[in-house]
Image 1 (cartoon, rainbow, N blue to C red):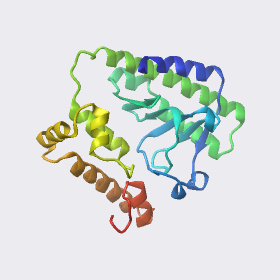
Image 2 (image 1 turned 90 degrees about the vertical axis):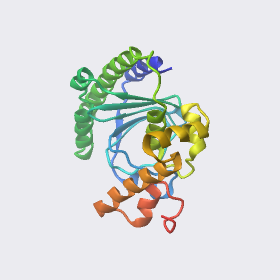
Image 3 (image 1 turned 135 degrees about the horizontal axis):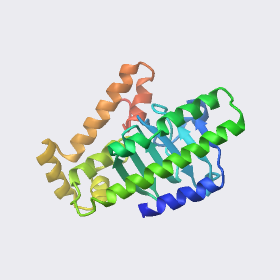
Length: 238
């Protein structure tokens, strides 16, 4: 399935979309929406036709809500996470791929242009450059990952990566992690305990608490906001 992503990108780029920058919680109203969360990386969302088929860019550390979308790409200088047709593919970029990855810089330029009410032609040019670089980067990452197809999957890394991407989901549980990895909860729990001396549930709580501590130290959010952003069902329980 992931091999279809470059063709999907080419098709999107051919329509010449303008990427909308989501820059404030007033626009997102994340306090009243489901599963609000924060990423450390930039996230580019390709919304489905039901949501207008637009492209939205969310800056690092910007609270936002979960949105059904055809695809999304989370990008940092060294990592690329592609969510495509409800499947997640995580790539640790090679040195070669890192050298061609100018997406964080392009995202920052687009965010600046949007805040400064930059001209539409300029914003469109940056949007097209973003899609072109994402196409080049994802094609290289997919090809490099294909060279390691014979390597057995690391079930702990798969499960722990899933937790780190989805800790904000209030309903996330052991069965969800095991289902994603493709093994029984009991077997995956035994792997977690061998690697980290803690089970899946304990590591989920640890991830949530670490993220909550980071947000509280920023002194930007109310305690109730931090509880919602890190997946707790109640701020009092948190």
